[in-house]
Image (cartoon, helix red, strand yellow):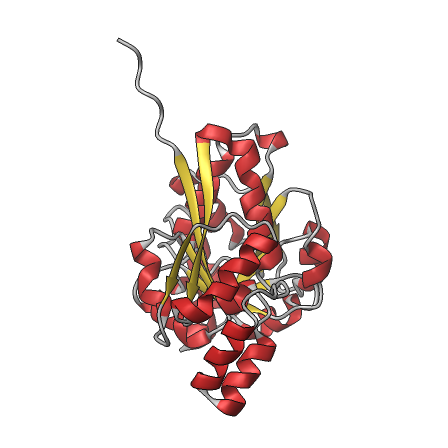
Length: 304
């Protein structure tokens, strides 16, 4: 009797149509002339491909992983949109024009599509709409608002490894330590983290996404993986130990860990060449997006 095949690993990322493509011109029609004019405009232009949006380079590199995964796993992009199927036809036509292998989509006809994130089994939802992102997070889904950035076009044709970077507290981990820092100061934070060094932090909203990335990584040799991850955090010694032990307890490999002790993150993200970086604090996101694509995770005390 032959041994059963190992289960195929999957990584599913849901992306809104306005994050995947530049819908600025058509959205202006909607804002100026209303929904009926918008529908007519999209139908009239449905054979004209949309230009790539802020999440396009990331989607392209995610799908490129499939050639190396072969039958061992699959990366899938799900298109989520407030468009109707009529107006959404232009979006799917644009995906085909640009060579994006997207076969699944939800067109919510004017409603927020966040409720389909869990139904599709998505490990992450990226949108340009902060309200949709907050709704997804409240529903227990990993989500981030992807922000405009200068380097979007430059990254579109980068054929190097996919590089994804994360902040720690309130992103990968809960905000329990961040709350102590904000309420009691740095000394109390360091003292508490030193005492709790062997107690794993609770999970944050993007832990599941990191775990899915890690599982894909296990299919490749560590030194020859087309996917690399990094933790880039403002923590420094002695609060680093609890983070290291938490990742160890989760049995998650992270390729690079930068403990910056309060230094600005922008230049380090540039040096890592991140395809996207996730942080919970708007001030860090605004600095990061000057260098790399950035997802704001509106979670925790910093976003109360």
